[in-house]
Length: 360
Image (cartoon, rainbow, N blue to C red):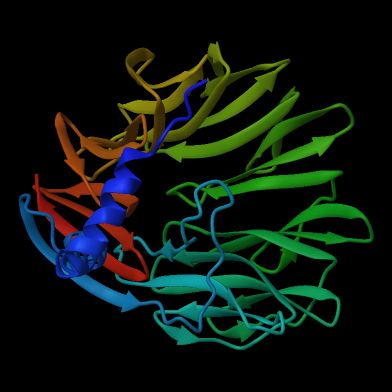
């Protein structure tokens, strides 16, 4: 058997002996290249993307001392924004496992734990906090007096005048609407208001779930989710039958899919869409018609001018799609929406929180 030789190593050893200066130059150049490439990469992704960008504003840079919670699947920071995208909040913990909310960059009071955060119209903001074994709501900076075993589903009405949340006491669940406790069920969830202050939620009793619309219990299914109001008294939700999910629109059942998500009406209630999934692909269903299929879809909404916007994914590339326009964004995109001829969204690039406005 002939013993193999590493010709490259022999040549490099000979070069070290015959020309040490040359070797030193090679090593120096390699170090410079290894330093410059990451720097260029970092510099590029911090810059404004050369598109039809009207403005980008850095709202805040998350300090290293903060430890915002992250999405378990993607690792992205979980940041919450209000509707005009100027206010933001996130949960963070101290090194000794105390929790606090950061609202517009300002640290709030520390608690044993912090739950759901939510913005409402007219600068309303609420979150759930736990102290001494009880959960309670902090509404616009004021701690509500009564504590419960659990509190979640914090929800504002569209005009910001009404506020509701779930609560659990003595093992049974109920909805608290404007501090008034409602009927007790085995479980309650998915609280939502309509534009006329209609109010609905999902409840479980016995062998199934059902929607409760303005106090009226609807048909029972294996599960109920995504309760959504639209203009002109439209009301829709997702329902599960066996392994299938379908949309119930104004009491009428639609097609069955593996899953449905992001139910949305346009401004006048004449357009209705949602995201559906069949094996390995997702697509938008608009007014009952299935659209183009993608590897992934996320966040569907109608802007005030009735333009449909959503995020699509082919492979690992994220794209904002508004009408027929596709926009690549280097950071994590949050809540894109079209208003007039402009596209608004938030982006988190590294530890920087941005608001981006583009021409449409």
